[in-house]
Amino acid sequence: MPAKKSKTVKILLAGLLVALTGGIALSATPFGAFGTHFISDTINTGRHASMLDGTVQESRGMLAVDTADQADASIEKADDGVTRAPRLAALSAYAAFLGYQREIRFGLDSAVHAHSNALLTRAAETDKEARYLDLARAAQAVADGEVAKARQAVQDLVRLDSNDIDAAILEGEVELRAKEYKNALAAWERAATLEKSARTSFGQARAYVGLGDTDKARAFAEAAMAQTKNHVGGRILLAEMDFKAGKEEKAAEILSHIVGPKEDAAVHKAASRTEMVSAHTLSGRVHLTRSRMSSAEASFAEALKLDPKDADALCGFGEVLYREGRYAEALARFEAGVQADAQSVPAKIGAAKTRIALERLQEAKEILRKLRETRPSDPVVAFWLAKAEEALGNKPEVEKILVDAIGRDPKGADAINLYVALAQFLAAQGRMQEADEKLAEARRKLPDSPAIHKA
Image (cartoon, rainbow, N blue to C red; front, side, top):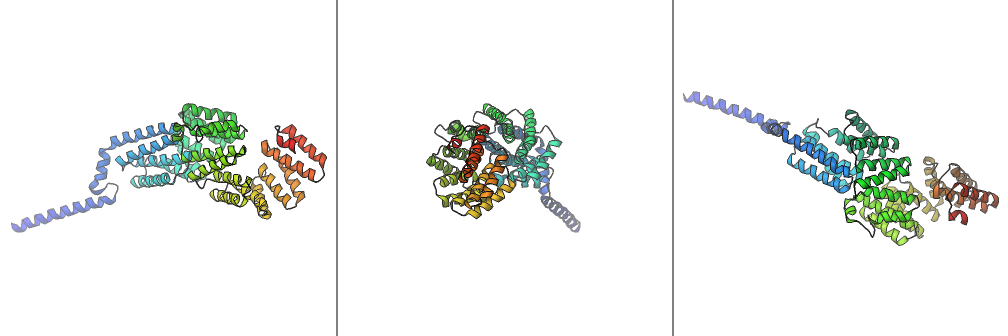
């Protein structure tokens, strides 16, 4: 009897060992040790579905407001859900999407980006087929600047579900980044059929800016502000359009509610860091136009406190220093602008014209020559290339460049500068009649300007 009992105990122990080993082995699978993950997921299926749906709907409502503070609130809401349901892969994926979407709309943020990357990795490891994974990956590509990859991914999402507002919004954003403004407008118009909101109105406004239709851009920017009282992007866009139209007073008035003496606390709270940088920079440009050098310098300095590598703010600061004759300091700012954004045309032009002032003429000419190869219709590039050639004594090239640039039918103040430069060049050669004819042509074709009368 004792021998039989001992054998039974051994069998039971062996069975227990097998069960224990099997249970532990499951820890290396999605089921978890002893299937705890599977059991937990099964028990919480209903609660998780409700949590996911609630988070998505609430987040979409927050994003529709189209302010940075609401975008941040949506991220916090989703993160809270991820904390309570760490194995709900779809929620982690959607939370990652929210972070990327925040960056796409309101500017890059390294902390937000890293957090979204971690959430996306977690979601993919938990469930490779999780809902919203493809949406998050598409948004990640947009945020990373991989426009071609992002466009394809977003188009696939839209084909799968044309009523998905998240995909529709993402399509509008990626087409804007691709500078495909007709496609962007179509995407935003389609998004507006799914959601009438400040974000779809502002998306259409930005598309119309790209298409050069300032009247419609203005109308949709104003609509965004009517839909969201504290809409910052709409204010900056209106100020930008007023500034470009020569209405500096109106631009300054709008900006004063964001960063000026009439600063609205609610508007300020709603702004992202990138929007604040843009507002300070534009304010600096307005001051610069009015020759208020100290105020301009202060505005650009404020922008650079928020983002020391903002190319536009660096260029603005460089322009102040250039006009004050502090050429070495100006060149340092313009070159920093090029380093911050290798595609920044104002930074390259600034670096070139400052080199002209420093008599580094051949370097300036080379920068401008390369720019003109890629931007043959840019009147500012042509103007400064002509200046470089003139300083080098290449008179035939000066006339050739200016005549060609005017022949491309430029508009506005840049066109006036070309006409005046050509008239002054011709007069210096003793060709007074031709100079007068060019100024007369400028008066016929362009808005009246003191610069034309002074020439």
